[in-house]
Length: 160
Image (cartoon, rainbow, N blue to C red; front, side):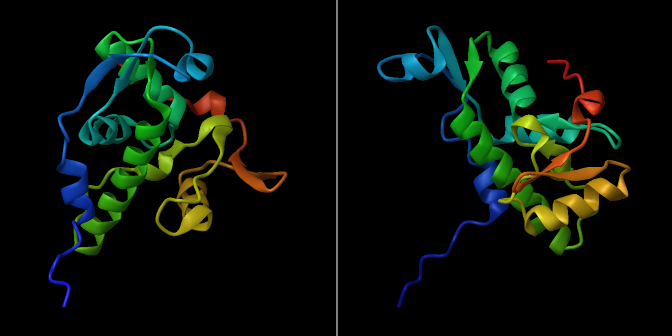
């Protein structure tokens, strides 16, 4: 019998794993990201930035990465971990809501690059679309993807 319990989303969010850390971009990553440094953020940092986005405003994962880089004096924010931690923050928010929590991270306001909805968020793009439209944003089909029309005009300016 497997007695190992899965970590809750909230526990995953609160596990900093000795992060954040800033490291030199090296090896094959130079071709992809260029020279300089990359900040690997802590999950709670990504969640904290997502919480700053007010109703009527939006952020993309790229804006969050740029804010993290500015905060830590790095060239870039890690695209891989930032995306994973946004996904964890979204699931932790829904976990909190399922237990009666009211003030949760408004993860639906954080989009993928190009204003694209995130299919990995709880409920998929359909649930994100519903929340965004309830806040006054127009969602349109762009090929096979759903995007927020004119999202650039609603981007939130992070202060770090």
